[in-house]
Length: 398
Ligand code: HEM
Image 1 (spheres, rainbow, N blue to C red):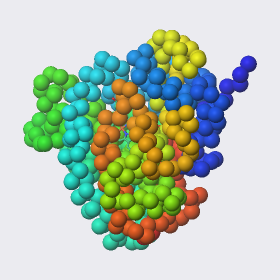
Image 2 (image 1 turned 90 degrees about the vertical axis):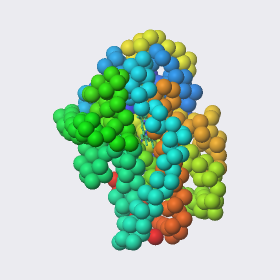
Image 3 (image 1 turned 30 degrees about the horizontal axis):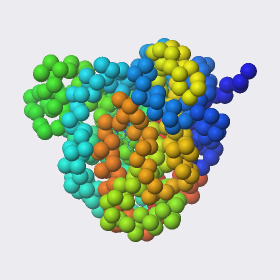
Image 4 (image 1 turned 90 degrees about the horizontal axis):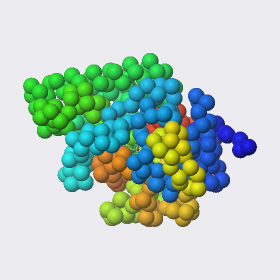
């Protein structure tokens, strides 16, 4: 009888830049095993890279939280999710298709000059302000928030509200009532903005959504939910990745020196971003799914109605795919990482996230050549308790 261990994703006991030690141990023991969740259920934990890719690409695997056996993160997360991220095809595809044109590589490239302006302005402000500063508040959070506000057509002046509600939604300790209230507030907010766009359309995603409503392709609630998903997914993730990437670079002086010496080489900067994405895997705690039919993978059969947790942070450290996977190596080819997920739900905003991260690291290192942490690693508050890994604060000096 194999003992089933409790699932934990906290990185608090090991190096905060590595996956949770318990999860790394699972990977060493094999690609798949059962774990016990907060509600007593025992879904499959899938630690291996190949098995994760196979399952994420399999149409018999469901993202719908109401599917039998679905492994919910918490009691609060059992209640709701947003739009097409929690739907299966063909419904997922119908909804995702309505906004896909806004998120192509070409569209993201067209935003590069504006992203650069936003990064420059925020850095001007931070570098002219008090030193040391909190990099999260002064830089990492405003940059992607401003970008997503412009893309969606949301007033940045409301950032306190949408950052606070997003924070509550993504915190594990939030109660079901607290999460429903935060989600309701965000939904109401986007709903009102969509209403205003009918009267006064602009050149933004919310206006595009109103056109889709008028064309009968989306209902108003479907459009509002897409707006909430994009706002939420578009700023929290990138903000955490910016701050965590800075810590990873400062903690690896040889890699930092290599990047600093090659800031005018877009290929190397792009490669550095892919490797930081792989190494840090901020969408931690696993992609959550349930089997709709029996599926055999990695020598195991997952039965219909059983849940699975596909732990991208261990997939990204699988030695079968990445040589010496625990080493941060900015020149390795890390492009096949799983940090944006895989399969039909693969991150819609990844071209934009890449452009933001490339612009941020290059400009920050150029303009702050003496950037350093202003606190020990053990004093920095990491988001062990969030659904997106990252930092609450990052004291830096320059
Ligand atoms: C470093 C930054 C980012 C990371 C690490 C990230 C990660 C992810 C991951 C892992 C998924 C897959 C979820 C799943 O399979 O269940 C996802 C989906 C998604 N992401 Fe991102 N994301 C980032 C930035 C963004 C940005 C900037 C946007 C929007 C502007 C965005 C919008 C979305 C959307 C809409 C989905 C749902 C896709 C679907 O279900 O079809 N993300 N993201």
